[in-house]
Length: 273
Image (cartoon, rainbow, N blue to C red; front, side):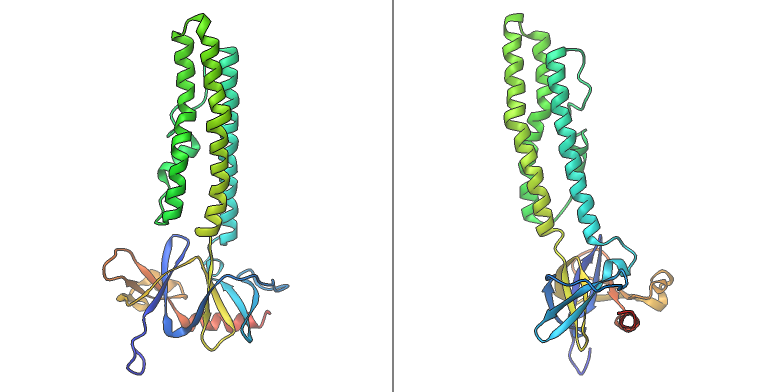
């Protein structure tokens, strides 16, 4: 409450936690623009950009809080997807070897037991576009893994005169239908995640030439205070956290940024730039 005015809070994500800042401290919010890096600047000062008639310097809140930058997290995600692509390229090669040479099939037949299936089953998000896209992967992925069981059944049950033709059809569907579809969808997954889940925003602070970079803006609303920093030793240990808050109708803790300590940090950083 200030001068009889109650300001709502801006809620945003940093990694897996929710933070907030009182909107009275924020001049505006913009999507992370193209920016210029600042030579010899601290790691958590990611660069600067022109906004209207001002030059805004950016503080990366992830790095300031001791977390890995979102660019690194995005790169790791892309590397994971590329690894899952290679897993399934090798899977098809193993199926082809099994069909041509016999013996035993040595890779996962259950689509939920391969690394992609385990990631798919455990991943959660509220983003409708991501949910819709990931559902497209399920059917071709299941068909791909089912092909190994079909090939085994064919080798056991098909007559000699039919076996070669049956195995050819199974392998052809995998190589020409299921596998290309999966690879295409995984490439699209990287693009979609980069444009939706890895979409940073900048909160430009009022009366300064600084903006703080956050992962995602969640909402603007009133919050309830759960505790003050002087009452919570763990919270008090982090100088950037002021209070612990909560939303009225949703579970989960929200950490309010300590604007005074954050402003002091920005003043210190200016001496390095």
